[in-house]
Amino acid sequence: MDNLAVDTTIEKFKNKYMKLWWNTDKCFPFLGEEISIKEKILHEKHMNKFLNDLFSHLKQCPETEEQRFNWKNTLWSMIKTFGHHSGFTEVEINGDFSKSLPIITHKFICNVKEFNNDIKLDKMVQALRNVWIMNILQVLFNIKVEYTPSVFAYSMLYPYTDNYLDNTEISFQDKEHLNKKFRLRLNGEKTESSNSYEDALFNFVGIIESQYPRACHKELYESLLCIHDAQCSSLAQHNVMTSPYERNVLGISTEKGGASVLADAYLVNGNLSGVQADFIFAFGVLLQFCDDLQDAKEDLDNGDMTIFSVTSEKWPLDNITNALFDFSNKIMEDSSEGFTDEKSNKMKTFLKKNLVFLIFEAISQNYNLYSMEYIKSIEKYYPFRMKYTKKLYKKIRNNYSSFESTHGYSIDEVILMATDVD
Image (cartoon, rainbow, N blue to C red):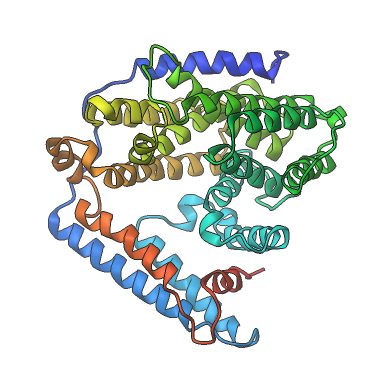
């Protein structure tokens, strides 16, 4: 990257993408062809069949390893077929990415279980998502899609600290003390851990140091300090609803999202060019905004400030969601300079399509925060009916929580066996 300190570069990017946000189009987005009710019902039938077949097949997990070979092949064939019917093909995404994903997922879950066997799979979602983001970045950089020590360590690091910082039973003073101590460790200074929680955090940093020596990767460690500082700043968003004129709500989310994925990129590629860093930061901001929209209702209930929760206090989320669609389009269309090879372009096409679905899904989970006119308009382009989508996630959660296998394996054990395809 340019000879600017990473924090200075992040400040420049933050201002750039805040300005881009303010200049977004608030009109209803162009979303292609409308999907008829008949097509939606057909999609819903296919989804119901897939979920029923999937959980039924998972419950039939064979008792012995020898018997599981055909069972796993059938399972992954079922998932691939459903993905193709849903418009996502290996050719469109990236063959190495789709083939490596179950292998990497398995290795990560195994590492998490070794680290703490009490962590359930449904609590790993945030960490797993970051693993997959790092794999996506590997495709963009046109390097091998693989599982590295840093992929594990960083993907565990910030969910681990997020859970601590979000814990309302821990005092603000204790959180501040931990943050100061952890910053010293991120900065390479010697500091002793005083409990098992700090020991785990410091060990994660040690894993990164073992792959990327500090002397050769100054910007990487600056990026880790930047995401830590951004995360500390985001504490100002928690448990208080004030005017956005009192706190830079947009700036906090922009910096946190961009810095997080920028650190992902350094841990994947070691070094970044200026244009690569620019797009990666923007992509992180976009993912953060999608997350904030997804969590709008929960954040509103908890008194946590984001641009979406603050808006939903007084206004429907119609226009700000239109802005998010436009923001997504602008970022994905302006990303051509840093990643130009065929694999990168295929991945960007996949991401652009997937981001639309991500926003659709967030809308459906915050149904009551929109005007009825907006829901009726957006539903025309959504593959399912809104009422179906609301029930869909409840159905998946119920299937997960009530899972009982033929041989008594837990759902986490079955998924771990299913992903063992190396």
